[in-house]
Image (tube, rainbow, N blue to C red; front, side):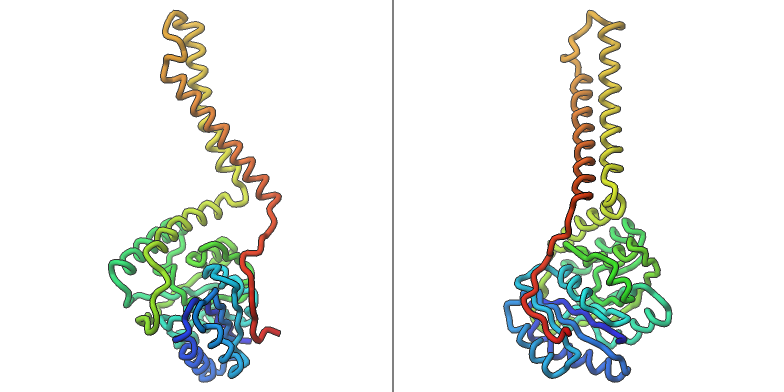
Length: 316
């Protein structure tokens, strides 16, 4: 199979038929064998009924329905687990991503041998204040932190080699950082393509300003996990050693000063250095304990089920 199109969605009943017809037209005109995997992330409208109807009309339409809303990352994880195409395309269901971009994205993966190609919505039709400016700030921070030189990390339109989606673990809210997750997994040939952004035709956006706050917090998380996720003691142990060493140095100075240099001076407990020594040694010990606990958790963790599937369509 040439292409798997993975589409997570939440309450997009109005756009699904038009999106399906557009994708199908592109696939047929380019003679691609394909599958369209819709992942209904707990919609409360008639999205699942529309997907069911499309699956009866087109055998290449497949569906996954979550019991409730688990989030876009979990929806992508479920879609990636089922995908069979040599190239996996992800896109949003709101018609803001253009299916006509699919052939060129496919050829960049197959012919140019990219591991991942990320869309760049250079010209956007979103609100400048609430979307564009926060997005530019977010992408700047992501570039500086990750070292991945992309202009638009959060674009839903991306293309992947099948090996990539089978070897990365998308969880929490990490869908924003698929290029960084891919890089950390060893897939370093990451490209970018300017894609057409279209104004939302139906419904309203599901994301508010809080997604950018969450995005920055997730960026800190993924930076930490990429550097210390497998060895938390390296970070916490180093911090603990530094703090404990500072405290021990102050305590040693106070002891020498009281015993030999100035035995008739103030009581140790009346000197601020005593509390600095006490506090830093306690904090250093706590960092050590945090590192040990992190190592124990890491060695004894078991993978928990992150979402529950209610229905599936057309999966053999």
